[in-house]
Length: 239
Image (tube, rainbow, N blue to C red; front, side, top):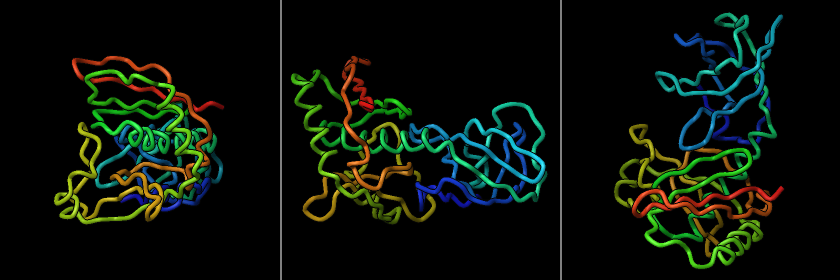
């Protein structure tokens, strides 16, 4: 099993690791990873892997069998041998923008309090699909409400509950299309705000900024109809 360092410290940009093997597709398995593995609508991280006598660009990271994370080389090249000590380095600018967009999407689900049917995160923009029979009447007001939440500079923290606690309170799950992973004994919750200032609490395994003020201003773009009741709302970082 790969230790997911991004989960405990999403701001960690470099770390030492050890190669534990390869996948049949040529992915590099490591014992610990700062590279987020593709999942939950968030892309896998990119960056570099260095070892004595070599360096390779990493295009993305994906989940592998047994709770492992595989780093996918950007091109065919010599790979480090099993057991090699390596250094992992993130494409930090890309990852940080994912963190900002991802956290902004959590807040979008606050200002549009409807069931979420899907979502996607990118470095420039992201989107959520909502079970929304009718389009919003005032997009400008939604955008202002979203940026007002961001401007409150609320803390973003995590908590953990058991699988049984999640099953006992399914109301905290906002995404209809993807249920949080269970079977590990506990589920990670992401909380925005604290105490009376709490505005959001939902299961999530992705990476987020530490405070909403780091997101910066966002703009709401297209609102597209996707099916009879589905509508897709896209946001973009203003910078």
